[in-house]
Length: 91
View 1 (cartoon, rainbow, N blue to C red):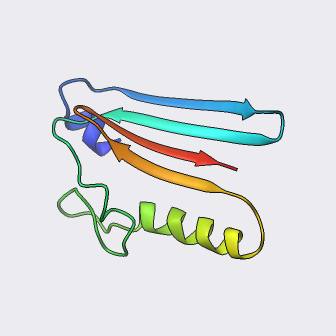
View 2 (cartoon, helix red, strand yellow):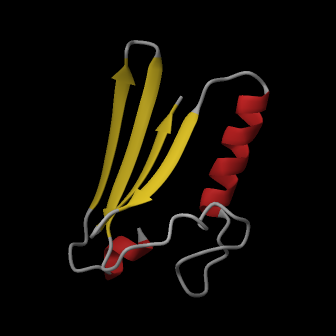
C-alpha cells in the first residue's frame, strides 16, 4: 500500500479466485515507481521502504513454510516487473 501510494499509478488490486474448485488463489498487485529486488524481501528485517520493519512478507513466508512442513500444499511467490509488484498465494 505504501509503495502504491507513493507511485505515479497509485493502484492496488486484489483478486481472489477459486482454482480447480480445490484451491483459493489470492493475488495482490500494486503499482511501484521502480523495480523492487524481490530476492531479499522475504528475509527477516528486510524492507524496500525506509523506516519499515520488514516483517510482513517474512511472516507470510514463515507461515507458508510451517504449513508446508505440516503437509499442506501452498504456493507463495512475489514478483516485480517494470511498474507492478505482485504477491501471489495459492492455498
